Image (cartoon, rainbow, N blue to C red; front, top):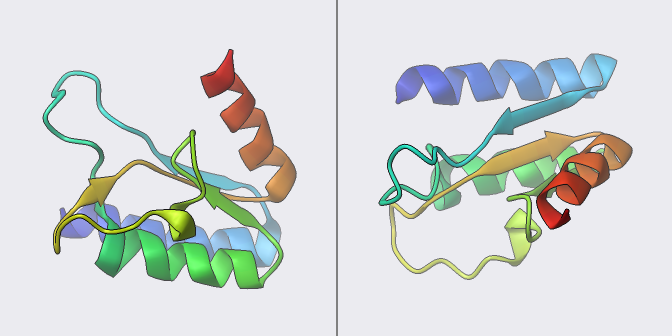
Length: 95
């Protein structure tokens, strides 16, 4: 799991300097897991930084920073980056 977190930090740096999008979606192979990144320790901090820079963050269905934590190690899918690109991915989830 630490590799996913490190990759996420590197991707957020890339997004802030060059633009783009980072996705760590829900894995449908294991329905028991909502995502790979932990909400409180990984998804929220990265989402906060990206949104402060003018980007957006989402699970595909809702804004990450609007999620009320249900547990300390709750995991969520993560889509963050450019507002326009995040909106496109959210549109795929709606359709």
